[in-house]
Image (cartoon, rainbow, N blue to C red; front, side, top):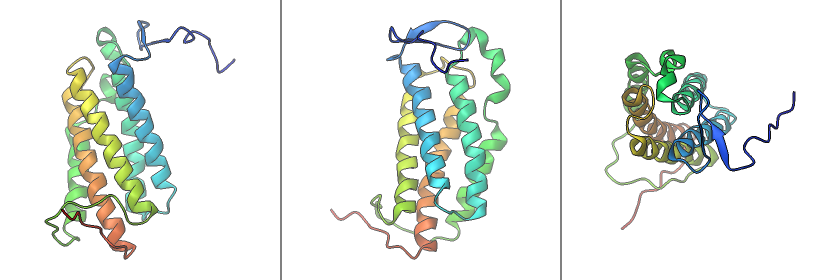
Length: 181
């Protein structure tokens, strides 16, 4: 079987369910951004993170694939992906990890520049791509299965990446660069 189908040569692609849409469609932008984020998460995982963070990021990568599938599925075919929608427990897991890391960090009352070392910077890249995905999902509204839970998961995920960047900086004894007005 060939990897290429040539069906997208006209600038369209198929949603799960068969409807062809433009590759410039906001839905495709959203699930393309979920895929991009997943790749950056993989790059972050390649940076020798603590095992608890790596384990959570493995979970996150699977959830991002699920969210991408939800975004790529026609509303009429939502039954194909209904079991892939993040759950309240998935969101609670992210909140638990955010709280656990936050308890280990000093309070900061300034904006933090996305800098430090490679690992810190990659966590910030993941945070900013997550925020872009969130904006694209808001633009789509409820055009996809599990839209509210997917959006909540992505919102918490950006917070997780922010806290993870601070924990990495602390563990690596890396300077945190505060914004100076």
